[in-house]
Length: 585
Image 1 (spheres, rainbow, N blue to C red):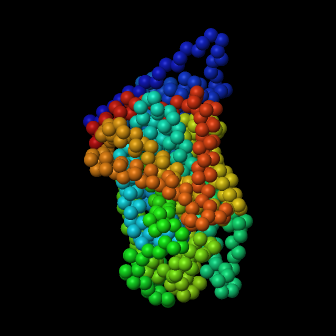
Image 2 (cartoon, rainbow, N blue to C red):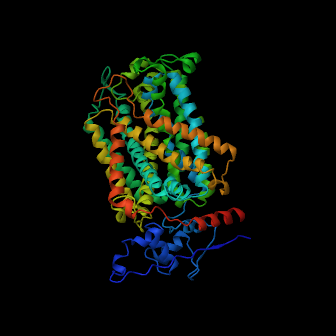
Image 3 (tube, rainbow, N blue to C red):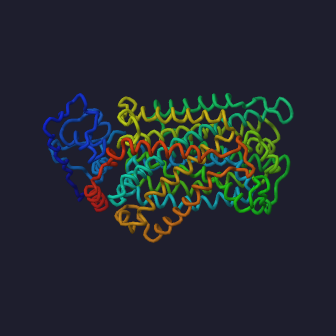
């Protein structure tokens, strides 16, 4: 028989003499006492005091919330909204995704064929076939360890706050505020910059695809100037945000469509390039052993490492799916399984996509000299022998890029909303609201979009801006993933033992691998692709990263140090809910 637990809100503290009492007119302004539960606590307290500040009965029916009507509301631990309430949050998003649908979204967030296609330039410059094939396999195995590590923790704390909430809950009290602050900023910035890089890559890739048609030998029909690329990027960004905002109900079906579209597109590409191969095929020895770092100028070992940005970028979205926990029916089990299963599936999908391309790879020096930085359209055109045939095979990748942008936009908006919910982003009162008509955090989505567009302006001053966007995204997400894993390992992995995805000794091994990778990735992806650096080829990831650190640090000392208390801290209730949930299964 399922067990139950009771949550009792703490009484309001008595106001000191002369202080202004709280009125309904300023109910959106959090009191210092509210930070006992985080800024969302007044919604939580309202739920348990019979006054719903937002939504109403109709909204709660849509969300599936039920209340007992007494001061001591009973939450069902088998209900994910009950566990969410135990963590101090009110359910505001509709749980519309099944196990299969969350796995599909995780797959779409990665969009491996698209991610590998738009960044193939880096391993080609960094060494060629060996870096492409073995670099992908090595990073995939590492990311599998990261996914397993995050899955263990997510099974205990399944909330849209994701890694920053998890970091707060498992960090010792003396350090939890600053630890969750750093982790949260890394996670939000990582989500936003990865979304930016996806949309920017689609713009660059589209220009390269159009230019398989030439006005003269070696001259594409589209100039691809900075303003043209930026306008295409702007249109893609607006489209992705519009679909994510107004098409929220159809997003799970788009994810399902993307799965079949991806498989059909990849099969078409590999069959056509291998069957036609107008300029011949490489030997198996070349595909699996050829290594030429001369194009980068770096020493062989470091050249190989710099080329790993290709694989790291394609797998960087692994933990972004955590931001969708509050829209998943059984997040404690579905999300961890989806993360691990998707990495395994993506590993195979990536190899199936990459190996045929390497078999028909043109001269590496020619590809490294491409001004567009997008070799895949050239590779496919060279293999099939016609511009029309190349476009036909490139369209599936372009559509997948748009679907990936929509998925990343959705995840980034949820991450921004969740962090704002706890007062950690300037203007949080505006960004933490949910549009009740669309059932999406529209304001947080618009904030994310504006930041992406503003950062996109960097392209006017540096042609290598995409390198910076992708590098910062990978670095920030990697650091945010590492934070809860590190704390969990240092505290003896006590919290994950009660989770539904506990891996035992294997989990410890995965933790160590994940942390070692995080320590390497941070300096690695701040490095330029070429040794001989010019202002236009410089990797500005370190500059963008420094700006993020400065802004977050200033905001912490201006507001966060005195006011930020982190997310809700119902440790006892969460632990009781988790144990009851496990016992009821």
